[in-house]
Length: 343
Image (cartoon, rainbow, N blue to C red; front, side, top):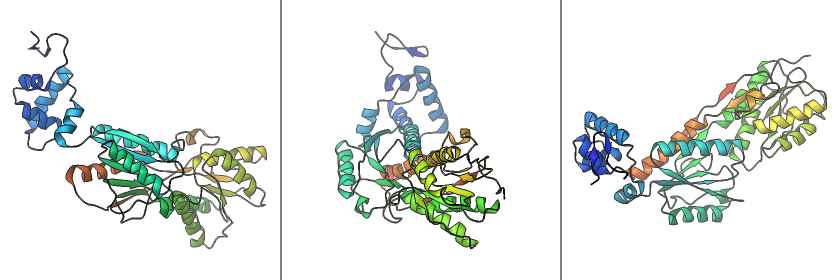
């Protein structure tokens, strides 16, 4: 007969909730409360139960746990191009934070999203018994916005107008201003800008921050050139900018495009930062290893994931109604790609 023996389970069966309760000297209800994070368990009892669970390598049955709570313990993410560093890093952070709260993540990709596509995505996640949705869809089009209130608990990242639903954003405008002011502070008379696509929230806010920095000191405001976030588009945009004489500093809306700028400069025998200084945005993990290391604006994607998951689970687990807007401050990371102008 299989039974709990010493610190483990006799035979080769998986340990059960009853096994944990027997070894810990508590009821199965108490073990269940510990697993579900119930507040009404004494700290010493909670610790003893967790120690027994670890010694038995007990894995809670998440399906049964979901049935007991009336929830699937799954959240959905609606997102666009995860080949881009920003969405990819945010998604990784969401998955990590959800896992720490014992939730799984279902990802639905949006192609050319509009209101109908986003609503279909939410409907699909609802059919899969998803408890709530994180909208990682940073396009500006009003057509991409969901009706308020949304059909499921929802939190958005860089997607929507504050006041519609909980929103987590980075202050992109501030970050772009920091980048521009850094270059101006080094002595550059003006700063050129290679922006992202004009239907992205981040792109528009970064362009406005660049304008803020120039206008604050009365600097000339060159015509910005747009890219699509890719290194190839940064290369093409740089060739347009570099055709203008007297360019000494460029702020690029993301690090991938900045890599393309460096390539275009190299082809023209222009040195960075000796001839032209460069600042990017995102602090892509590879930015430190560009040649030279790229001065850039860092976004804390781990914090973005933690906050967005936390907001969503507060709504799911408590039924609270909130339209909280959390704004994170970016950080200027100084490396070797920006210096005072040579002349």
